[in-house]
Image (tube, rainbow over all chains, first blue to last red; front, side, top):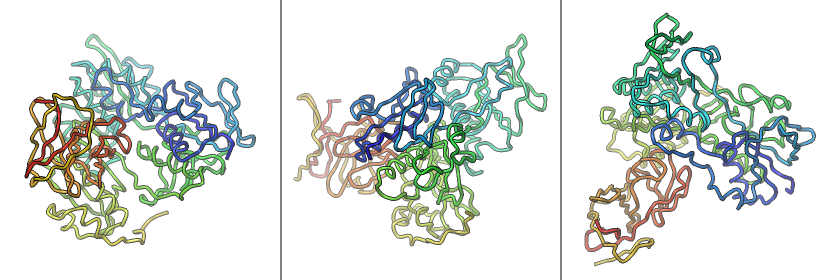
Length: 416
Length: 119
């Protein structure tokens, strides 16, 4: 193929896509147009080391020399205004027309905003891009009263980082449980307790209606009228996929750009990858918009591989991690089971929680047990049906179990 | 007495052979973390009869690679699943991109030694 491949979006997925194209042997023109003024960098550290370690710089998806060495034309701070699918070109905000043979949309997501609080008496911060982290970090001083709005993964990681900086942290979560999107109840409760033990005040089932200020400083006003002292609100209430370009171009969009197993949109010359997509997930049994670093990588690699005409798509088990207070928590597969098996030592803070559906392993959460994740993934791949007592027996090598497990190929009671 | 030499990295004349552990303390399933005074922690691995020693602390996060998943000549970091080649210290899978040191190794009798800066 001699026509250019254009990638819109210079984040994790965009960075991996261009790298995979070159590594896969594509020697035609590649253009990467990103609205951020940075080469592709990794977002996970922004809520972790970036906030706790002074002088942090964003870690690069590809080495600095890579783009020039591989003749990848990178346009930074270059938002795309429109996609012309008929004429097969993208038009940038500067009016530049960039023709494509294949297009990859990797526009990611943006934080959901609480506009009513942004005009209040207490400053509001979000955390998505490196500039957000650069603004946030200096405000996490010892004694600062930080109110985290939203008890999800980002909020709780920022809470842990703020505690490490000596801040006084309160978390306000609208639901009755923390971390319910990503973690099972058992894990959510465990993490909540650890946050509590570290001095974080947790308020559940409440929203912040407004903010105010008096002679003692700023405060947030909850929907029950209670006040919480606040020098800064850090909002983490989810992300919204940047589907606008795709939508305007007539591609099928439904809470994310709809893509098939190969990453193709409703236009066969246009792919979409990363946070912006919604795709059927074999291992979840449903369509999902997956907001993880691993998904950005695997979808980007998959789409690039398909563009190059190489191997077919492979089903990937959704997987992500969260680091809080030196605890490494990882989740693979689905957490909505009808049973669980617990292997390891919860008190020692090192265990695996297997999520079962009709006795088959469909997911696993590990806490400080990353080594077991590889074997656990194999169990998920095979939908292994293993006696709970055996799974829970630390004397039996998990890898041997995984190697010997008979694949149970019939999907277990799935909904399409 | 058998002597097996691992990867040769850039070392200078003042480096010394340092005792790490007994071969009997190593299995082919997992690494062993060895902490020496005044030295970053090391991870010792036994792989199909060969021995490898690398920096224990992952260059991407703070995980102990001795706690990682061993597969052939690669160790997978237990935190974020990046990988390193034990023989060279080179990262072989994201998100690990910064190489770590793979130390020359010698087995003297029943003991594993690595060559590094004197303590």
